[in-house]
Image (cartoon, rainbow, N blue to C red; front, side, top):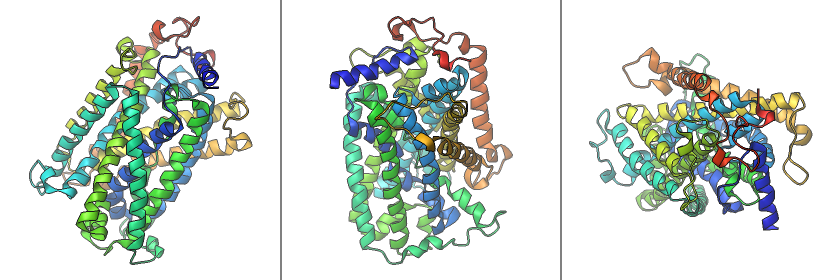
Length: 517
């Protein structure tokens, strides 16, 4: 059965013109672990709780179910795609298959840059946790200087990125072992934290109706404050496509990947939502300054005390490490997928699979170096956390839109065929779910990119180009990247001979007939 299943999974790659190269070693839990470690409950909730609370008060909690409902529509579309096309570089290959080679390249490019920025953003979470455990981790100044926190954050993040680079370079087996162990510990720690917070509640769930007057002075009243605060929730619930991106290294991915995508998102919603709710119900005071500066780290230490609290923060640190590893892994698989289509510079080198480690080594190194460059650019940026994080999320949402929108067009034109019997399919609900996924993605992208001082220029001096930084950066990446592709790279596109399926060759422009213009 295993041999037959593997043969069927490998055969699906020929639809894209590829031959199997990556070793299939990942089971169903490994696939689930990849998705949930990217989402990482303890990383996301702990990294931006302070921002959500500061901007929207306790009522910002409602952005959590709002974001879940929207992202669930996207995840359902992705689950249907994963059942039909379990292939490395999922977003890139799906977009290419549903739309055309040009749309596919842009989706892959946006996702790749977003993954690099996200790796830097996740790694910054070390700064929000380590100095809370011990002041000895504040290597730069004492934390009171204007640039102490940002500079120290870059230093700690660089160490983490070096670690994820080495692990990804040494092969998928090592990555999977670390990832699985880390996810297991994170899930256990999450449940323990929920129980401990529940034992210490001092107020009822009605706390989530308290806006803390954060809507005062806003153009849209509390709605304006709430939309700004929703960045904190939007940051957590993405990356579930990683389960499908490891499809060429998974066993029976057409069945396991859709389940892993949905289970990872739903588990994160339930567990993360409970942590946020119980934190608000158990913290000693809702007016403590630490809530809007140190966030959940402050809550844990306040409620559980220094000994138990710091033990939980060590678990958070492990979760951050595993999350960064998952983000790095997804970026490597995407770079590999684009390179074997000769769609990146030095593609033949980027797509080379190490015979010893059976993984693409060069992309792991390049992604790590570029993430370090993102940190270096922002080293003296006081609002480094919200700026880098928000831009990373926006680009992820854009990349997701470049999948869900072509999928909607394919449905309307009758060109979309779900996977066969016994595999995940939305059936008659496919069209309405797809429409909602597109509307959600477009609306939330605009909301996240909106030029707000609170996100992009919270500290003086105030400049227009900082406030409009999301539009400028994302626009430059999209237009500049596509210009390079259109005038240079598209003329070289085609599956590299050494990666082409038997009989496919490299002369087939690198895409299937369905993916061509």
